[in-house]
Amino acid sequence: MAMSILSQYSLISTSLALFCMFSTCLAFKHKHFNLSTMAVHWSSAGATWYGSPNGAGSDGGACGYGNIVSQAPFSSMVTGIGPSLYKSGKECGACYQIKCTRHPSCSRKPVRVVITDFCPGGPCLSDAAHFDLSGTAFGAMAIPGQEDKLRDAGVLQIRFARVACDYSGKTIVFHVDPGSNPNYFAVLIEFEEGDGDLARVGLQEATSDLDEWWEMNQSWGAVWQLNPGLELHPPFSIRLISQYSGQTLVAKSVIPTGWQPGAAYRSVVNYV
Image (cartoon, rainbow, N blue to C red; front, side):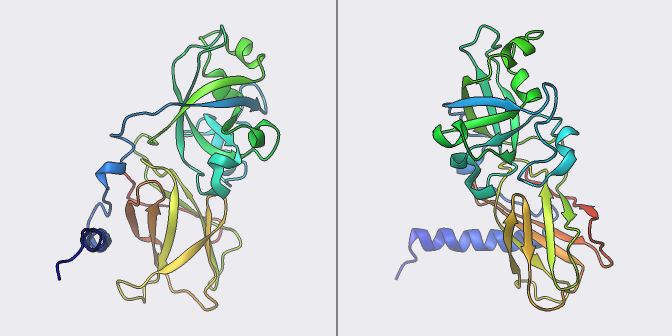
């Protein structure tokens, strides 16, 4: 019997995923779901801001990025998000364009923000979609010189659109959780370009067969963990699967032998 179209697609996807494990770039894309090439679709949302007027909202927020939210490439252009878009932390790292048009101080020009925090109550809960922006990001929607006037509005109706992330050529960084040890491994994942969010994360030990992967669980925010109940053997490769498009990326042996809790390890790959 002829193979069904769905079966053929699954076979092709599996083959491509295996190819990514051995190739230099270690990435592939489903073209129909590539945010970089898709048309921008605008929707309506509410917007507020928190923290200092020219700050980054909070020191890291619910996604776990810590004080890097105030540093490049985030550069305080970050937002907390209501439950409808936060999706229990699955959308940490996702990027949106936002713009305001109704207030006299609105520039009407879109700016890009990254989800780094969660907003659990008030309008974040009652609105169909709500952005609780850093003071910096809120002011960025203003006509130059009128940032304070826009922030004085307090609450705005804005337009938003899901877009690809752009971190100016940075590669993905893995921050090992300070509580990690030879029998437990957790890692904060930063700077995924393109889709920006993750559906699944896997870990491969140095002693594993090429097709053997431990499935990691989302611990909280952008932190993923593995508690296998036995000692893990580095170096570790990390496999990332995008939630938005299903793109697969493998950072080969990115966590070295002799890794340290609390250390950060930069890969040589990213979604492009």
